Image (tube, rainbow, N blue to C red; front, side, top):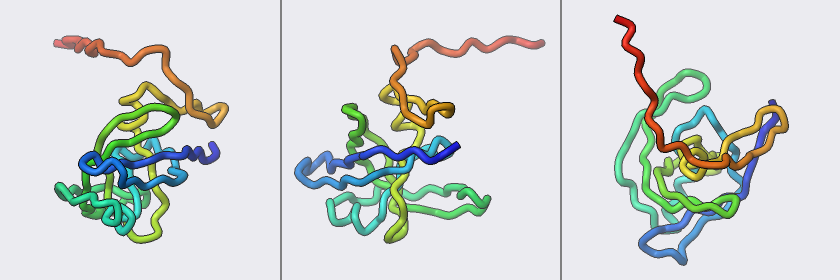
Length: 128
């Protein structure tokens, strides 16, 4: 499958005039979004915590994260953004995609809107 990118804007929720916009790589293997930490600091995003993340090569690395508004494809959500290394390619994680009802179409290498966001709970089957 090829790479899919989408123009995404991160917004400082406390100071909405402070934004960061770039082409983000859609990464269904990533839970959270990531952007260069120096750009997040320029827009006034403060680290709220630290998490361990497993990278594509299997190594585990700790990153700081902050909270932002995330806008793409005419949709708005909010969530975690990881303070990546300077110059890192921005990533749009699956949590942001799912929260606005957008999924990756692997055949056409595009993003598509779901007709509705599911609110139903998965039913557990008792195998005992």
